[in-house]
Image (cartoon, rainbow, N blue to C red; front, side):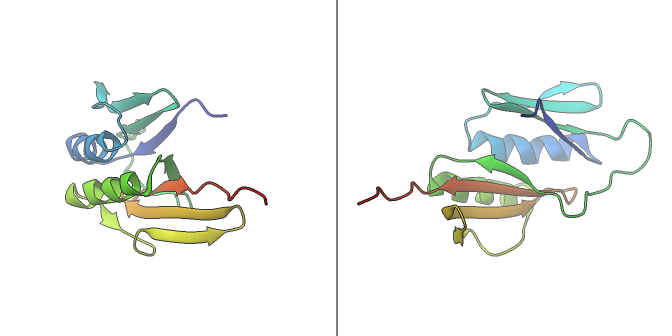
Length: 130
């Protein structure tokens, strides 16, 4: 449905440390620097952080969240811990189970060093119908 997600940042080195750490927990290799942007590529998509090319300061989109799929709750926890250890800030409720209309989810939320809101999620399998 999308080709890539890109967020603004104010410091490429700081963003690289943060995203290399959180994406490393998901099996994504280090970012690739291309002038004023860093790209992380996986089988399921591309994520990028960029210095604003219009020369204006970086700002955070109000109400936006970028979600990353994990295949276990433990990976959600590792993602969250890596983010906090590398300049991110925990936000929302602590990592844990949430009940949603589509079933149980295990979620963790972070703000990256520039304030962008991120979420790692694991969707528990639905119980088999009896």
